Structure formats: C-alpha cells, structure tokens
Length: 138
Image (tube, rainbow, N blue to C red; front, side, top):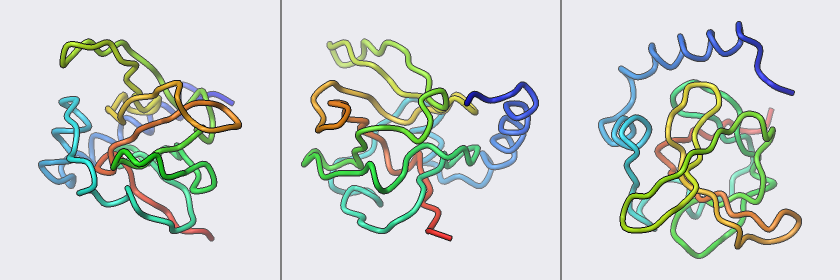
C-alpha cells in the first residue's frame, strides 16, 4: 500500500499546520535532523499499546507490537506498519555513515535504521520519541 498523490498532499498540509504546535525540540529533531538524548525521552521505556504516528503529519508508522527494548535509550521497532510509509537517506554526520529514516508523508526526520535487530526482520528502527505520537488502542 502506498500513498496516493492526494493523501500525500493532505499529509503535507497537516504537517504545515502542526509545525506551529510542535515544541522547539520536536522542530529541531523533525526538521533539522536533530537527535534527542538517550534514556531521557518520552517513549524509550513505554510499554503502552497502540500505534506510533508521525508527530508532524499523523501518518501511522509503527505498532507497539513491533516495539522492543534495544537497550539504547530510544524507542526501537523491528518493522514499520507499512514499508512504503518510510523513506531513507544516507547520513554521513558524526564521522560515520548511517541510514536515516524519514516519514514518507511529510519528509520529517524520524531516526536511523540498523541491521542488528531481533527476529523476525533483523532490523532496529531507532526512532526519536519527539518524532512520534502514541495513539492508544481503539
């Protein structure tokens, strides 16, 4: 499942409206590729059930069912809800090469993905809490 042009446009409009409501930390992380401190963020040790959505545009990104404790201090997931809802770009900051994860709806920075995660995927999506909202089970 991928986003239609109309759905993507709606997400970008929502992100533009939401940007004013985001905290300075969220804006720095989502729009300026910042990173929050480990172990001092909202969701690193959260065990609530629900869907993690993009804090900027609201696109559903990760399920609590794919969340696990990676012992890194950030929320970690082994897989997204829908692979096409995430985009990737090379990040060569801090003297290393990493794979940055961005929201497929609005292009906001989410975090990084590494190939050292658990089964079933072997992936570790290391995501900034400030880039997410947790929507409870309905």
